[in-house]
Image (cartoon, rainbow, N blue to C red; front, side):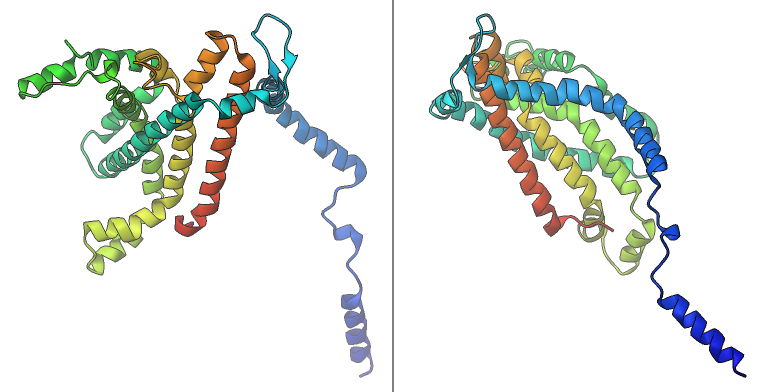
Length: 319
């Protein structure tokens, strides 16, 4: 009779003791060192190129932005003079404005167009694998090739687009030769090329949605539009958020199509920030100002991305 209370007291005392270090997940010194070396060995193939070709050039550009350098003579330190010159130059505001206009036209086109394609190719469409491949093909095509093709399509005198408009009795615009239409020409070519990328991302998001949720909404009497707005889009919001962030970053860095289609013209009407960085470096020999402008662009992209990350809490739904 007395043995049972003794056993209960012993069990209570054992439970009250602090846990033994033997059950800790911390690795012993030697094993922990081996684990750290193993992790480092796996990270090195990516970390070394990242340090050499990304972080190193960024730090180098930061130093060059504080100097006056024409790529030939030794750099001369000028402090923040390059930044002050750029802030006081009206052309700096113009190239940022052109870049913003490009984003305003480009982002809705790729987002709405990519979503429409993803919704269409998420159905039981005959030959949908073929159509998915066709729409994704421009994504893997060289930007220079795409830009030259669109430059030919939008040729004012003999281009396919203006010829087709002429059949309808419409006088086609000058497109990339007209200061007003130069940026829309670049936007059309860019949206056409990137539609496939947005389509694939959103299509993957659509296929991750539980069909039972859409079916439940249909049984409750929700029509196609209501199911799209109230069920599909909220569940697709993480994919949409990713597409918006990536598209904005790419939009701020637009260069290839501008260089190949208009070269920043006519009359600087399509000059964007990265084109200006290129011209300052290789046409005017002002590498210091070019580096300063690149860091200004980096600051803008970083600020916009941070705002998006903070704002996602209001509209992105993570199931």
